[in-house]
Image (cartoon, rainbow, N blue to C red; front, side):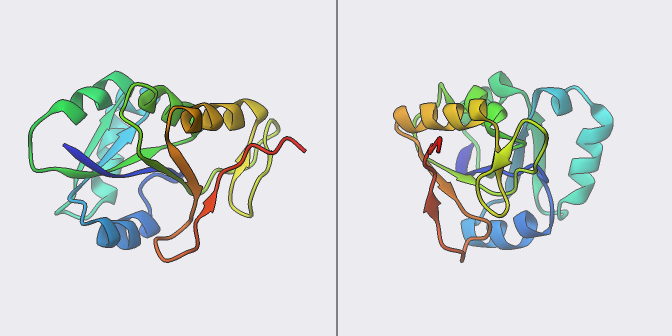
Length: 155
C-alpha cells in the first residue's frame, strides 16, 4: 500500500475527504487508523458504506496500519486519524512525510488553535514530536486551501 495522504480529521469519512482529497490525491482506498473502531464491526460497516463503491475502506489499529504499509499491492490510500494521539501512535515508527491536520473539535481539555482545530497541550506536544522526527505537520482543510505550518506556540 502507498499512503498518498496522512490526515487528522475527527469526521473521518465525509464529503470533503471523499470528493476533494480523493480527487486531489488519486487515492483508491481509505485507511482509518483507530484502535477502538478497528474492533467495532458495526462501525467498520458504517465507514465502508459511507465511501463511494470504488473506494476500498480498511480500518486498523496502529500496528495493523504499519503492516498494511508493508503490503505490495495497488492501493493508494488516504490514511485518516481521529486526532493527534492516533496519528502519533501510528506514525512514530513510519518514515517521515507530511501530515495534514483538518478538523479537530473542541472539548474541555482543548484550546482553540485555528478556526477548525483545537488541541490539548499533550496533543500539541505529540505533533511537535512528529515534527522533531522529520514530519511536516500542516494545517489545511481542503486541497486548494492555503497550508499553515503547525507551530507549538504555548503563549
